[in-house]
Image (cartoon, rainbow, N blue to C red; front, top):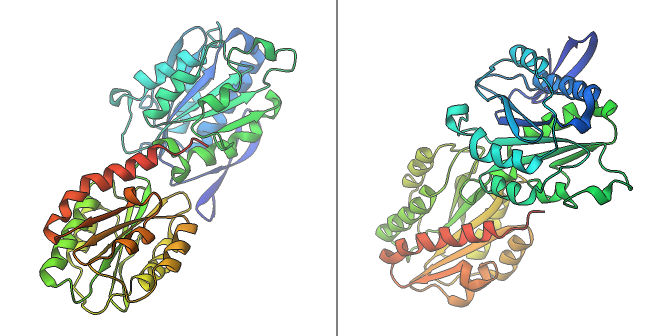
Length: 415
């Protein structure tokens, strides 16, 4: 085994052929393969499909601390060949794949997806909860039923759907396809990442590594992302003299109350914080604390600074020290809390942050200026800026802020 960055290459022999397979030691997914057992695939191509699945099992390096793999064969009806907990090492899994017998029938992919959504990922079948759910659908030709509704429900359950289509319909056969663009209607995102088309069964082996790399990249598994586990949230906290020690503790409690609502880890939502006066101080970055309790403890330890109010400079600083280090596939949320008008211009800094993908929420208290709050906030202002007359009323905004964050997340287009 040779180490290469965050991945390993493993040489192995299977059916007399020597292969070099890339696998990731950090891969932890609960993976369902929906394999085509319909009569249209034929016996020879069914054997090629099984060889491909054995190669994938080898590349994944299946185990209880890493990826687990189960299999459903579909034809007229779906049939569980084995579930997630049936085989906990690659050798046993490959032996089980070898014993699979073709069932025949139609290519009812929609029925199979519905089955996987309702039954396959139950805890009793080995679903771990802490690992993303992934379903890879292999299709020879095209489905004989509709996939759109079944796949939508599966996506909404958090199942990351990939389609692997081999030798799809030619021009003469396209009239037989029940649902045009069935792949785009089914996959997790329509950006090409979740679909792989293979022109020939004899080149299927070439997609083992690309597929394994994609299903193991937890940051890209968009369907298991929710509004509560897919953001980098940076709090920008006014520590100026007008706030005072007691009110500053109230602000920190507000920050803690928002943070509590999110699923926090190094692969889920991450929290960072900046305090500012005339100057700025990074209290902690996104990569500093990986559990909710650590984040809450860190918020509690923030010491009140006292000084002036340079909010524009604070936004620039937050972008440079927090959001420039955000992960590419995370939503960047800035929640700025201030009790007064800034001594410097906020417009330029806010515009730059917006243009660089930061979604800004502004929370104003007491003497904060409404026009500045609206300038800082991402459009539409009324959903991203809030004003309260007293520090003790801050807590009232927590549910609304969380609801707005989630509404915005859920309205994102699938592409």
